[in-house]
Length: 75
Image (cartoon, rainbow, N blue to C red):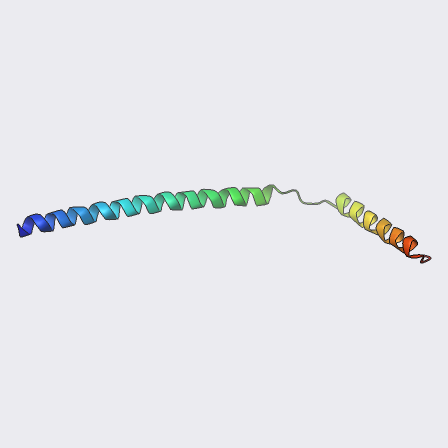
């Protein structure tokens, strides 16, 4: 009886370790896939070029001038 109990305990433990290992591996692969998608999304964002920066600077200058005119300040 002692041998049967030991064998059943060993098989149960082995099965539990296998289930935990497979579940952990699936979670790890899912996490890696998520990180890959997040990384791809970060690199896919367009970077502003020089023309865009110049246009933004021009718009900021126009806004500054309009605010000065609204405040009654001569430039």
